[in-house]
Length: 104
Image (cartoon, rainbow, N blue to C red; front, top):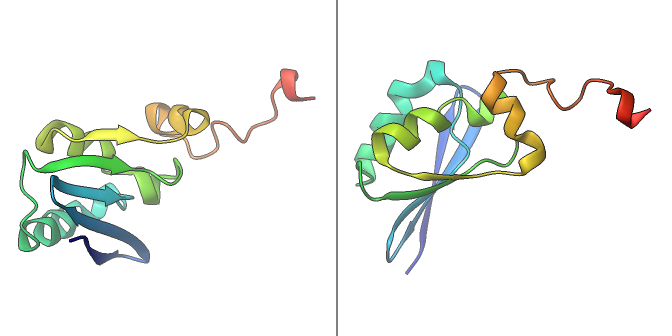
């Protein structure tokens, strides 16, 4: 059976999906909401080792701000569109939205 829990973090909703094999988190909120996110994960029974996947719907900091932290602490794999990966890697929400010579 699959359960879905909505986690509201300062105007951003994240969704924790409980599956037979662990947990999947959709979006992570901003890093400034990390303590609340951890508390919500723990209260749902999601602990380091059983968060198997984090899905980032896009690379904006309010959705991806805790991705690297969750990968390190929980051992979760991160899934996101490759065109947004630079946004997360560089910490720049506009990284792939800037005018580039190859797009003109």
